[in-house]
Image (cartoon, rainbow, N blue to C red; front, side, top):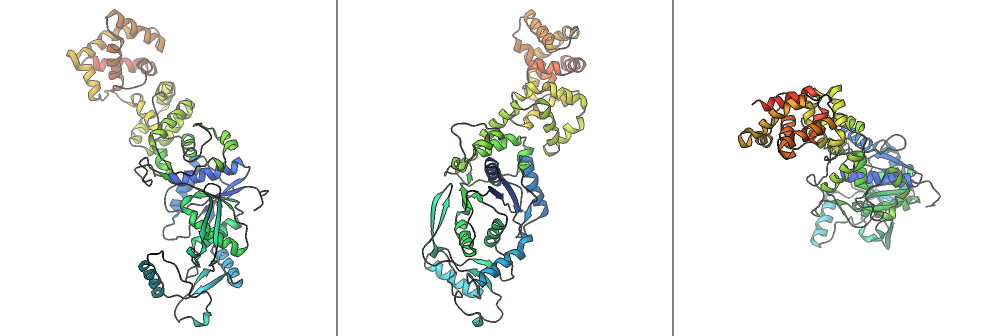
Length: 479
């Protein structure tokens, strides 16, 4: 293939479920490689499995890609819609003697499998109809169409990640191109579509490496240029086992609902299998210049939720406060207790949330943690006090409540309700009462939030209105 051709990659998922983490990384690598080389990524929906392919799954795939920030050139292409074109290519191969009709019966095929099992070798079609005249065909058998795989030598795949991989042709039997009902097989459809779409580089999981050898035989039979290939190692769980739902093999919609930012997830995914020195954080415009297939390693990657959370926390701290508020609002319908927050959402709370965001985002690793940390803004009096917070108020003969009762008049007398004034008054009160600051701040936090953890207590007091703050403190001081 001429290197002068513009780079064209493709992402080709099957619409049988959500966009999972492995598929998302494959799409990301294709997208980045195209961008880094001034090319384009195409999207093909491999929907030939009509029983399992659904429009809902297709919509979920498109939604997942869009949320992750990945775009593609033109409209998404349906593989099923190209079935007639796939059959035309098979007709060309039949005419050129590169394919043949196979009339082997189900019984014959089962006998071949049993023989292979007895001889402890992989099942292979034995080519019995490869050179026979169709006039010898038994009645009542609709033939499949098989390709004539070379019987000698090797098929070599020169892969950008795996290197040179050799496959003895004797192990690559005459694969089926068209089923007996005339429907194209996956192997055929993929090759025809990639050729017709002008794909120059195929970047996909290394579980397709054997498929690459079989598909190269189809390219050669049609005398078509073979795209360059890069088969990337799969993603495993932290324990080295195949990635499952408990490890993180979830759809993009689940990561969105868990409060991850798309920029953070993109950054994390690109580092699963690709490296540029020891750098961890990359902006998209940097990857547009840096990303290359050479940076992809051969070893499987391990998915690590803790590392993803830490990276997400980094991105949260770097994100504009107003944008974080907007993103929180967007995911509320998708999260547990989201309806509770939505019912209480109004412009006043939204403004308070923006004001509180600098303190909130210092602790949070996800948007869900952000909104949970802001629970005190949405809570209505009388607050539900968690057990640990209640203990702070009630221990030592209600010492915490006693502190609040003594503090209230001094807070009520403040002429200005802002953070410096509030902090100065609380510190002065603690000093006057010969108390450590924590002995005052902890009861305040418990009374204002109902919890033992929150943003800085002075931030909480400043964000809440004077009236609300004093009322919450009074609720707990008078018990």
